[in-house]
Length: 172
Image 1 (spheres, one colour):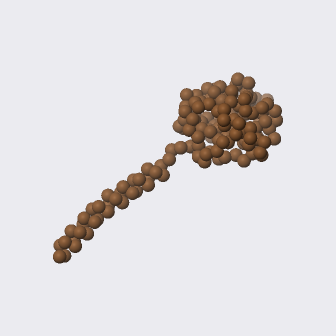
Image 2 (cartoon, one colour):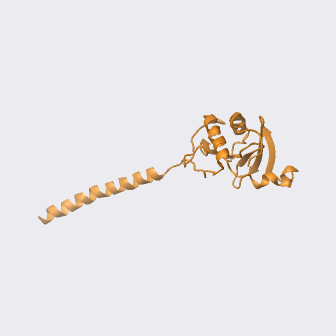
């Protein structure tokens, strides 16, 4: 009888180990999520409505990348590709937007410019890539472009939606 109990325990251990390994593997796979994340802005109600309107007209592809929105899901954020191009609508005004050195062209890390009727402030990001923020619109729209693309294709693709949903003016 002792040999039966011993074999029974061995069989239990043999089945238990693969089950445990399978559980760990499954848990690892389910928690390994390579989707992007983005902090959701909290603008006033008027700006939030403009941002919801922007979300409705954003393109399905930007710079050849398919739309894959970041977590948590929000009408104030959008994303394309991997590594993700991230759009956040209703962000605060960036401090460099009112920096006289930027306006005078004396800041090598921030440059104002325009693409297809939309004015942008371009800032270099630590670790590469750029952050573009709309200027002269009733809501600030921020677009983070990872290192690699120069950003012009991204801004060209986003300009029609920004012009349609975010009127020219001064953001509050």
